[in-house]
Amino acid sequence: MSWLLFLDESGQDHQSLAYEVRGGIALHSSQVWPFVQEIQRLELATFGTMLHQYRTEIKGKKLLDKDRMRWAKQNQQMPDEERRKHCRGFLTKGLEKKKPSRDEFTAYGQACLEMAVGIFEILRNRKARLFASAIPADIQKPKNRLIDETRQVEEFLRKDHVFLFERYFNFLEAEREYGLLVMDEVEKQADRQFTQCLQNYFTKTQIGRTRTAWIVPTPFFVSSDMTYPVQAADLAIYCINLGFRLPARGMDAPVRHEIAESFGPWLKQLQYAGEKYEDGEVFSLFGIVYVPDPYTARKK
View 1 (cartoon, rainbow, N blue to C red):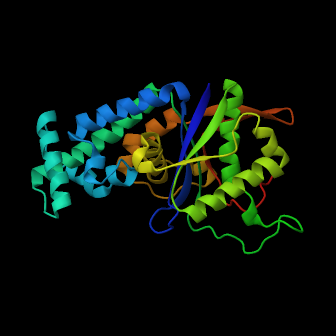
View 2: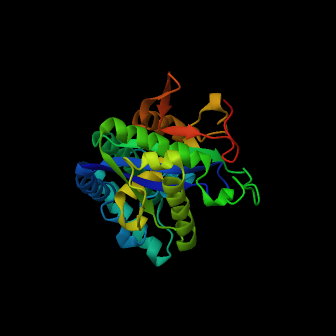
View 3: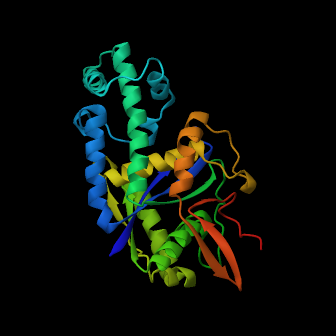
């Protein structure tokens, strides 16, 4: 049996978010299909339809956008059937380029919030584990910097990504099960470049080769709009970017309080927690790691 780590990213456009986050949720292979089935039932019960029929999908930015959360609060909580009816009206008018009614805005906002909470509940019930690494969105990559006489920085994984896979490896080693990497297909050139960095790390570095004992180093790429676990990963990573902080490590940018209050506890509950042994000492490891500078060596 094995675990599948469904990966996504947030803040890579460096436009409005404080951090660049990569990571996702790990599901045991025995839990993937039950997870998908439960998400489908939740989607239908929440919106009254499947979102892909209206050319949209489950994403953190779409579910927890400021406007949607404001819509949800502009009226009292609707009964389920009424909410579903108005959601279908909202989505239909979106395709028709028509303005929805106030009730339709309210229903859709409430459905988005309910869907987000429901996804985290399903992740908990399916014993998912959360792994993610974050760096400042404004960090500058050094130009033409060499690791040694022949290899450039761009050829290998950044430090934050190394820490991400370190935690996944430690988790798998403790579970004594293999792990696969499933990634959101974004842009072929960028995907190809990241895959090459992965392969260099797992085949050309000593620690990377060690970690292939449990991690299969070749990722699988899927389309997020057809893959519910990747959509769930997108939601979790979005919530980390806007509602999770490690101030003691320097991760202290302002949060969106409604996300921090509603989803911060879920992130803490789902993130991996373990230990590693190094030089005779025991260190705590957590699934969410912040790296202030992914291009410089860590001080001991």
